[in-house]
Every structure is written in C-alpha cells, then in structure tokens.
Image (tube, rainbow, N blue to C red; front, side, top):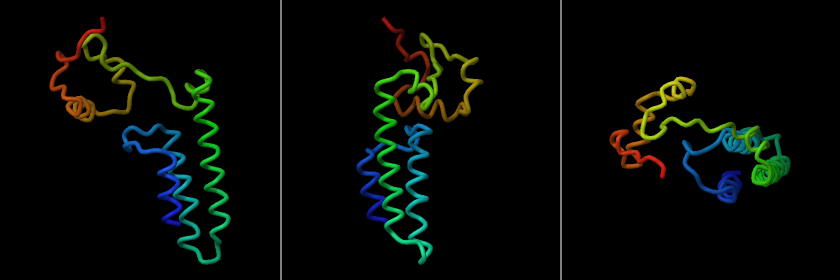
Length: 124
C-alpha cells in the first residue's frame, strides 16, 4: 500500500502542503484513508483499496478538467482568491476575513524575498 500511495501521489503532481487547495487536501486524505485500512486490518483486502484509489484519482482528474473548463465550477471547488496587498498597501479589511496570522503572512512574503510591503511594485 505504501508503494501505491507513493505512485498515486507522484501521478497527482508535487506541490508543497501550503500550496494545496482544500480539494487537493481532501484527495490526499482520501488516498490515505483508503491505504490505511489494508495496512492496519488483516480482513481488508488490497483490491478494494486499489478500486478506491482508482476512483479517487479518476475523480481528481475529472474535477481538475472541469476546473480548467468552467470558471464557476473552479470558484465552487477552489473558492475565490482574496487580495491581501493592493498597490503595495496591506489590505487590512481583507486580511481580517482570512484565517491567516500576520506572522505567517509576512513569513510567506520573506520567502519571496520581500522584507517590507514597500518592496511590492504597483501594477503598470
């Protein structure tokens, strides 16, 4: 089952956990749940887990295709993006709506080599 998990996640692509959407996180949890039963319970066979894996990967592929074709479906599955910096200014009202701590936000900016908001360029 471990090899099946690794192979499936490799097929789904590689992204950091912070970059995962809710949909992708659900897919990974589903894969882990399907893999866990045969590993922990002797009476659960590997074939049902492989069927569930195939269904999850198939549904992931279908939903990803539909997201690419339909903007409304993408918004339904992924949610709407929220602008936290507008024209180099911290959008405090939008930030208060998000479940993100200020130190996490600035840590993400530092990862992008931005040490202060003034370094954000205004769009041309």
